[in-house]
Each structure stands twice: as structure tokens, then as C-alpha cells.
Length: 239
Image 1: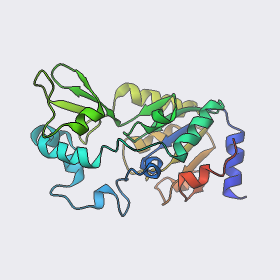
Image 2: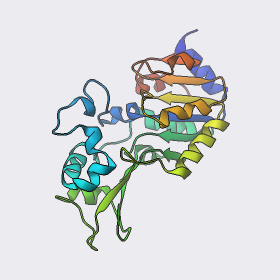
Image 3: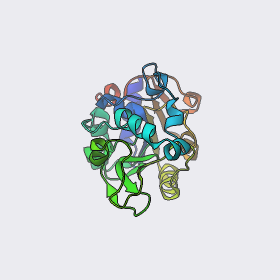
Image 4: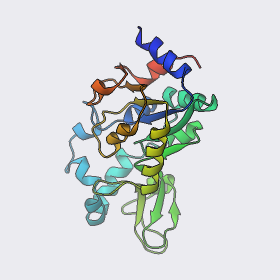
């Protein structure tokens, strides 16, 4: 059977779909991914991006962290793309119950999605570590050097850095959503980042769909695998 036709039939027959997405959702909005040939991790810097974006580096070299963060992590002009808009329509039709995202750009909410579990946090939220005052992404983008609160405290993005654990409530909500789903669509992710990638093991159903440009470690476990961009695939599905 044609893969797009199979996907259409799976969606038509499902009423509790969960979408689990990664960087491939936002690359169509012009936000670079991490692990592709042109991704962030294959560019040359004084320090590896994984080191710069670590808990330790943030506290010991916040100046270098923020120079990198402003330049490479804040894409505040990005707009939702076709995958974001498709998922909004799927939710409005009463078929999509939750989105679980590894992205930190807030574009799912900007598109209009209501139930979003942000596993790695969001660049849109920033807090003083001393008094917990809130700062927007625009505040951080416009700042220079090490952004400090009016109280003198260091401001930290509400994103999960390397060496930090995921938020317990977010994890519980995401796992519960996957456990209750009758269809799980995994899209735009290499499924190489743990513990997030392991979440799909909680899906008990027989409609596990993987949509990614390249192969993933879970391809052999899926009921349907499509190696293509999310935008191209979703544009051919009728809702």
C-alpha cells in the first residue's frame, strides 16, 4: 500500500493521536537543527556546542554561553511552518490530544496548539536565579554581555541544558499522553537524544509512525516509516 495512503487511513481511524517532534519540525521555519550535515554540531567553534550549552559552562563561563546563545539559539523572527499549522488543524478536528516537543522555540504555541509538553523548556521564558523575576526572549536578545536582573542576579533561560534533568511534571504528562494514545506520530527527530527518545517505548498501540528525512534507530519498530520532510508529507494529508 502507498505510504501516504496508509498514513491517511491511520489518521482517519484515530481519535487520540500524539505527535512527538524534534528539530525537523522547526527547520521548515528557518531554524537550524543540531545533527544534520549543516547543523549546529557540525560547525566550528572555540568550544563544542554541547559543552557551551551545559550546566557547568553556563555557571563558569556565562559570557561565552550568552554570546553563543544569542547568536545560535534565539530565532525570534521565525514563524510557524506547515507542520505546525497541520498539527493545529489536527487538534481542532478533535484527533490530536497532545504534542510532545524537543524544541525550545515556542512555535507550536505560536501556531495555536493548546496541549504542548516542552521537554527541553523554552527560550521564551527566562528567570533571575536570585529573585525569580521573569524576562522575555526579546530582553535577552537585546542585552549585551551577561544579562543581569535589576536585583543583580544572573538570568537563566528556562531551557534544559546538558547535565540537567527534565522537568518531572512535563515528563509525567508526556508519558501519560503517549501511554493513552491510539496513534503516535514521531516526526523530525533522529531519536538519538535520551531520555526523550525512550519515551516512545511507552506507546502500547499498533499505529507508530516515523516521519524523518533520514533513518532512525527506531525504524524497525515502527508500523509505518516515511523518509521525507514533515511539510511535504502533511501537505498531502486531508483533514
